[in-house]
Length: 121
View 1 (spheres, rainbow, N blue to C red):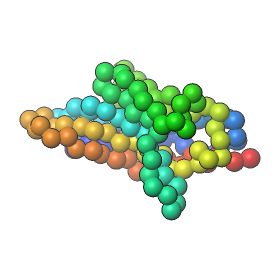
View 2: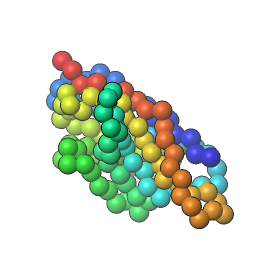
View 3: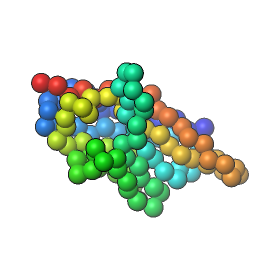
View 4: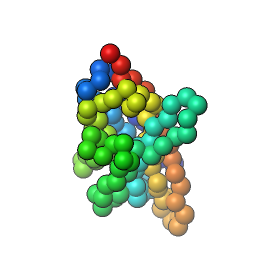
């Protein structure tokens, strides 16, 4: 099994920055991609950024130029650096790992509990 824990959310003023983290743990698995999603009440969860095991990155149009996804090479931890934050970035942010267990050929998606980011003056 894979467990994911997000942290680093909080309150920030418009134009400010935050870095949120996703720590993965477990055994007998390999992660092929890690993604950051966000969701607000009454709205559909949307993809913000993804990164592959090879280091490739992709972003939603709303995040390009402002957000950066990365991984700590020494730890099973992924980050989302958010700059120039806007009120419309307010949401609960979730990390999602696409992983395959040892001896299996089918991928499974795992989700964290989320961390709240609020952009307000």
